[in-house]
Length: 352
Image (cartoon, rainbow, N blue to C red):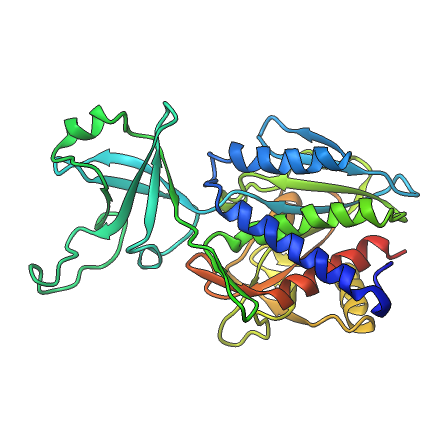
C-alpha cells in the first residue's frame, strides 16, 4: 500500500473524493427496478478512468482490473435502494404504494418523494398516513401499506386528475435522500445502504489508477441493481473468481459492537457464517494496520455475497462495510467509517 504516514494527506484526499461520489449517488433516484441513471453515473466514472467495464442484461456493471495472477478477487456493492411502486390511484387523488425492499412505514412517514412516470416526468409528493391530522382523528392508526399514502404536490381531487398528469399504476417512487455532510464528519442521508459502498469502490478504482498499484490477483468489481429484493450480485461472476467480498453497510444496534466510526466485519448473517479463513484474513489486516473495526452478527441481513452463495458459486465469501446507524431509515455514518472501510479494501486487494 503506497499510502504511508509521510503521504497520509493523499489518503485523506481519497476519502473526501469517496464522500463526493456518495453525495452525488444518493441524489440520483435508484429504487430497485429504476437504477439506470445511477448505473450510468458509475459507468461514466469508471470509463473515464480507463478500466474495462461492461453492463449486464440485468442492468449492473462488471469492472475488470488485471493482476499478476489470473485468479480473481471480487468486490460487490449495490446501487439499488429502497423505494416503492404505485399500486392504486385513490378517489381522493392520493396514491397507494407497494414497498420495494424491506422497510417499516414509520421510517418513511413524512418523507418527500418523487413519482416517476413512464413518459419521463417526475412529480413531488409526501408520504403521509391516511389519518394524519390529530385535530380530526383521535386515535393514531398503525403505519402499514394499507394506511399510508402519497400526497401529490399537485391540484388533484380525484383519480382522473392524477391520470391526466400521466401517473399510472406501476410508476416508480423514490424517497428524498436529504443528504447532509456535517462539520463533525457525520454524513446523514437515506440510501447510504449501499451507495456509501459504491462511492468507495469508485474511489478505490481511482486510487488503483493514480497509484499504479500492481495487484497480486486480478480484481473484479460488481455493481448490482437488485440486492434489496434478494438477488444482488448472483451472476456475471468471473470463472476465475475464488474470493468474493460484499461491501455493504455495517448495522448498529443493541448487543452489537459496530459504530459509525469503524468498518464492520460480519461473521454471520441470515445466510449463515461467512468464510472463516477469509474473515480471519480481514481481521488480521485490520489489526496489523490499526484499522478501526468491529466483528458482528446480523440475524436479519443478507448481502450480494449471500445471493452468490445461494446461486451455488464455489467461492470464499465475506461481508464488510462502514458502520451505518438507523439502517433502512434516515441513516448516518461518519468519515472515519468510510476511511476505515476504504483502507481495509486497499489492504485486502494488495495482500498476497
